Image 1 (cartoon, rainbow, N blue to C red):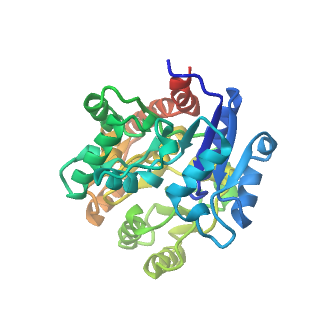
Image 2 (tube, helix red, strand yellow; image 1 turned 90 degrees about the horizontal axis):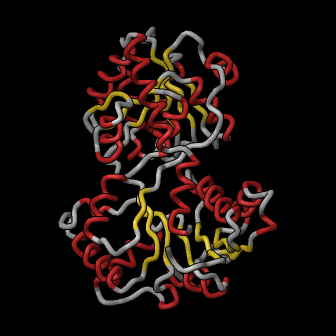
Image 3 (tube, one colour; image 1 turned 30 degrees about the horizontal axis):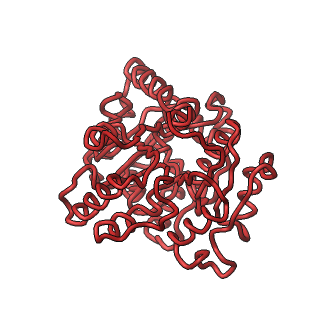
Amino acid sequence: MQETISHILIFEPGIKGHQLIWLDNITRKFLSEGYKITLAADYHGRSKSIIQNQLSDIIEKISIIPVFEKNGQWYRGSKLKCLSACFYESKAQEVFLNNLDEIMSRCLRLSAAGINPPGNLRGCISGVYFRPRFIENSLWPPGNIIKSFGFKRLCRQSWFKNIYLLDEYLYKKIKKKYPDQSFYFLPDPWQGDFSHDKQEARKSLELPEDKLIFLFFGISDKRKGLHLVIDAMLSMPDDSQVFLLCAGSRSPGDLKILKGLEKLRSRGMAQIIDRYVSEYEKELCFCASDFVLLPYINHFGSSGVLSLAGAAGKMVIASDFGLLGKRVKEHNLGFVFKNGSIKELKKCINNSILLDNENLFKYQESVSRYAGLCSLESFENTLMTPYK
């Protein structure tokens, strides 16, 4: 049992990808449990409007401190100074960072050099640590040696309160190494209604009814491996059963990906939703699809898309790298291919086409079981564990 607190500062300067949904979930859960909440966020211009819309029914119940000046600079000049100032001004008893990675790299390097974070944060830092790479390998690359030393020093001096990890394997490892620190394994949650009829979803999205639809959902930066999917599918015949549904904003600077997608579209093998996808459209995308693609390259950490695939009961095709590959293999969620290999990815796509109903059903059962492990309820229960 930890000391009783009543006021929490939630620090979240971003609204891209999962950030807005996590901001919503975490804020609502703490608020529903009776905590006073101050939010430190990007509260100017378009970001302000998006946050107000997302939290419209609770916005009057929370206080908000902008983390950026109107000129786009950090409040008080830097991220750490901003965090410290917001914590001081809010008069909160604890700061919760939805993404500890925002400050950890710098904090660990400074700590290794004997320089501490701002003093008012000591013993008050909680949050979700997405990519603690130094825990996986404390000796390589060399920068991990520095980070490991810095983390050990900060733990020894009791700077952290509660740290949540999204990697169940690293959680076991770090728990054993730092038994006196409060660590928790936090499921990567999904939410939404994924019971929409497949054919109705396809009609709504104007997708072909007679194709096997492979969904690539999310942003298209190179590490997400969309270019691998494009190259694999471009090498397939026009009359293939394969059809790519690519949903989420594309980077205008990646001309190769844009041209590749256009080639697939012109061949009748793809549909592109190149913009922000609403929650309802997200549900339709997953319900309309047969398989979900996770071809991420050298991806360290979890993936919310895997949780969404589970919620929709769709088997996946994923890179064999890191946590994602481990989960897919351990829970029998689909096929894995060699990290970065177009040839192996194409082979997996072709194998998925040949799956009989019996084996496909087994995969669908497995992904549905996995969805139960990462429900919003599981996420919220774990989030609140140290506060009970």
